[in-house]
Amino acid sequence: MVERYARPEMKEKWTQQAKYDAWLTVEKAAVKAWNKIGLVPDEDCKKIIENATFDVDRIDEIEKVTRHDVIAFLTSVSESLGEESRWVHYGMTSSDCIDTAVALQMRDSLKIIIEDVKMVMESIKKRAFEHKMTLMVGRSHGIHGEPITFGLVLAIWYDEMRRNLENLEQAMEVISVGKISGAMGNFAHAPMELEELVCEELGLKPAPVSNQVVQRDRYANLMNALALLASTGEKIAVAVRHYQRTEVYEAEEFFAKGQKGSSAMPHKRNPVL
Image (cartoon, rainbow, N blue to C red):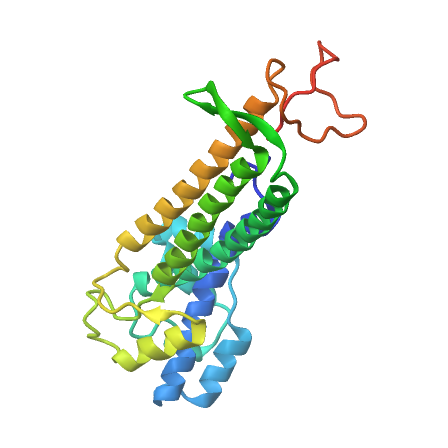
């Protein structure tokens, strides 16, 4: 992520540490599920849940040899355990771990975005009521048309954000699935009950059908929802920028004490949004 624009709470969900944390969460959920099924002994399950860990630098070191990220990760985890390590990743394939973990990361990231959208909607709604009688020029094709109110402009933005919220909530529902069905998705080495127990533990739904991977249309659906949200943000930003043009000057962003607009032209109060 670009450091200047990356929010700390979002950035921390997509670090190498966070990725492997999610992988380990899935692997531990699988061990607990095998324990419920009756395969993994209670003592081994307890040791894995309490002691399993990894080291990012060590994973990088191992991957230089294995050229396989999941094997490198599992090797690092195994080094933190004893003989009970044999139950980690039991009956699973790499994508069982990766795709299920990615669902956790995407779901948790979407929760942040959804809360932000709700906050923006409340702000727009508040301003819409404040300016429901604030007259301004209405434009079509950029040309003066008929009088409108700034409240109407804000109401349109609010309505579009409402649709974005619906899209994001639907996308989160679609993306919140996991799979523990093996290399071909045919449960050759693990029962369907394992997948159900793991997904229940993680707050996900089992993918109704899968092959080696969770199907990527789910990701595309999420990307589409994010693209629509971004286009709304761009639309609002461009409009606010236009309203601040010297020749228009119908609105203005807050300008803090000591804030500067230009190193060469001190009179400028440039838009930031």
